[in-house]
Image (tube, rainbow, N blue to C red):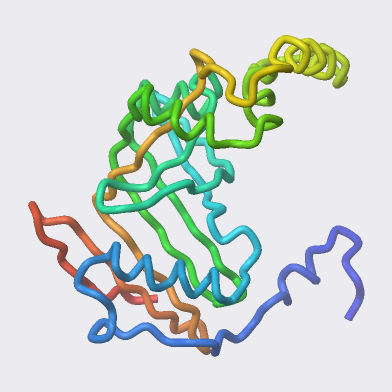
Length: 221
């Protein structure tokens, strides 16, 4: 086969037959959070790189979408928590349009979890508690970066500000919380668990919130 220098033929022929596991509706948990906990702990046990990395999709009030990878820092019955600069693009979009979607992709286990829901801003006290639990270098980094804002084209501005703040806070291990930094919680309204299967006949179990209960549905691949 003639090689396509654009990479087209190589991409078209990339495929993998998934055979690692299965997901049956009868064996999946009634509560999707319980099912997520099982899969997340299995990802930890399998030493999947960055198991808490998740794609966060947001949209502007006009419906223009954007997506990026962020790190999950907590999950429980209240929802899924991450932290960011409120003046970043994602921060602004979540404050103006508090709906979001998450995707966890654990390729080593041939699994994916999709979550959609409404968004809540965490309290200042909760954000401060997490912020001051981080390494000091990370606290300084949050103060240094005006996330998503244009810079002068190189790292000199950031590096100079970092030096300045290290001197300013040299005697403190816990820095004050920046006004523009804190947490968000995604409160799920639905989940989808995807398990890769052979012949592309994948397992997909969808959970939909019905008042206080969860309805569980098997979807076609």
